[in-house]
Image: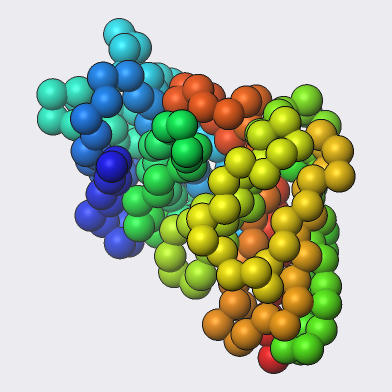
Length: 116
Length: 115
């Protein structure tokens, strides 16, 4: 079974600064993918970025980038130039797929608060 | 358009009521999901529909009854719920069953309170 670990329950960052949210994972699969989602207080889960296990380069999407270290089994999210609207819960996830399942396995999440 | 629409956004129901949650997507996705999220916890899978057929039921109590009338719609029928069923119910869709490199898109969720 796959497992996602997020060890930072909460993080604070000042506006315009960069912040790194940690994620480690455990899987026996050779091919896998890692996802980051943002969940504001409104409840919607917003897809941010994806990293495949065979991708040679770290994924980037605008202000979001993923620091992928395969040997360490870590996939940390880096948010550059933080904005007040970045305040939210952030979940790291993997998709677990077999003949009888297809689900996202989430970590426990990190609550990010951006202050002026 | 990467939108999944859920209605209602908020629902308060008594333990003897029957209500339904609705979810709609127009991305042509063939896999649709219901997740349940308790406060301060990550989402947990309840059901998966693939090509309009129920593929996975994660041992969910029968007071929750899913339905997929067509490829764009997913319902969750609720009956005789308990206060501990109060949670955020999230609908999601994905292009297809299985590819580990394909993201799922979520709706805004329905915040359900059972009184």
